[in-house]
Image (cartoon, rainbow, N blue to C red):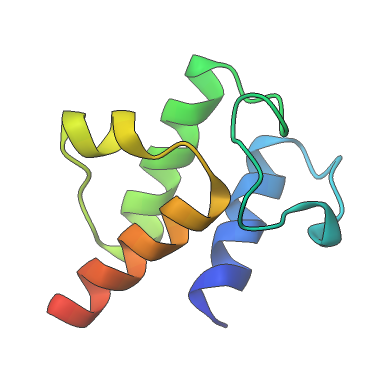
Length: 81
């Protein structure tokens, strides 16, 4: 499973699977386009940290605003390890 597929799966899990994968383009805003409130965004970050074995600092967590940014952040951490 690719990073993109796994991130999509985590987003769908947070959204209670009410979102088809094709509605998750890289430019989609987690808040505005996907409707994730701050609690749902924290849940997504925790799931991503657990699922990928990466850690987001407070600043990094606040800077991740789109699906693509989350994928890029995780990929950069995985390739650096």
